[in-house]
Image 1 (tube, rainbow, N blue to C red):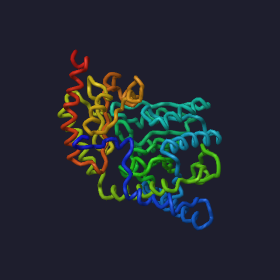
Image 2 (cartoon, helix red, strand yellow):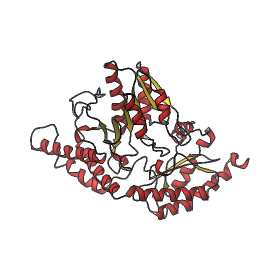
Image 3 (tube, rainbow, N blue to C red):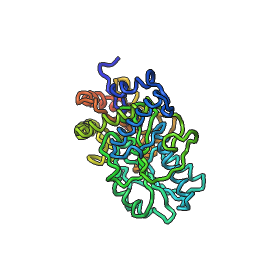
Image 4 (tube, one colour):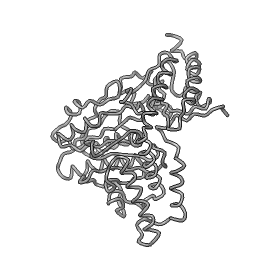
Length: 393
């Protein structure tokens, strides 16, 4: 057992807030009704779902009726991309979709799957910070373009996209705009009444809520073809008996996240993020921040590439020191290929293999960061000493 444990993998999942667990607990036991039943227990469950829908909507300043609960953020992405593309094609609007090279697999794979179903798609490049150019988006729009899906903020490199400008381009051309805000919702302020977005994806477990529950904001008047069929729950867009405990948990997590944002927690985290980044870059030579910096980066997110070594080795030695992080490199899942996100930003294969993502939570302290800054440099030195690439430089 190490002297200290520091969890820095909050982009993968967060710890469920105890207040969220407390809110969920009764809906596993004494309040176990099906929200579609008309009796007392059903009405009790329906009221809880309605409350959670209002709480979740308030986080992004949406109307409750515009929030659809799904089984995950990935499912919400699938519903948005496939559901909109099919509905628009049925109306004769066209069958061309635009996305970016750094989207989450849930969106990118949905677009590519639609490509096998007779749709056409364009994948926009990004710059070295992982940013999509609004001008490039405008140039890619065709008369038959119906849908654009570009994520709000990237999970691997933390870059926040110019969503307002991208959405304005879509509005000018009458193109529907979806954004995957799974990493952003609950961590930065989002107002769908101000932003020109038509659909927006969220997930509870990225904001201290439970796993297995997502949500899709669908602007009023947008028509989607459902990807799940059955009893017609969730306004006919997501059949299946509602997961009441998880929905209640999502609502409570959203309520807590909104209060935290209103109190300026994102600014506090951003200051610690910058302290962390400066410490890593100053203590470890030939290390580079990946993604954007400052206001263009998620407040809790840091990510680096460390030359001459691989992410997997860093993860194992950090784990032994009680520091829990992740690598942007897919080699940790058995692939020899580095992250497609990092390659899209212009990194070469060898450098991209040395990626590391360390993402904080509101519970992370300066002492935690100082501990990492103490343990991390010797780990890099040890791995570089064994690296044939470093010894040959």
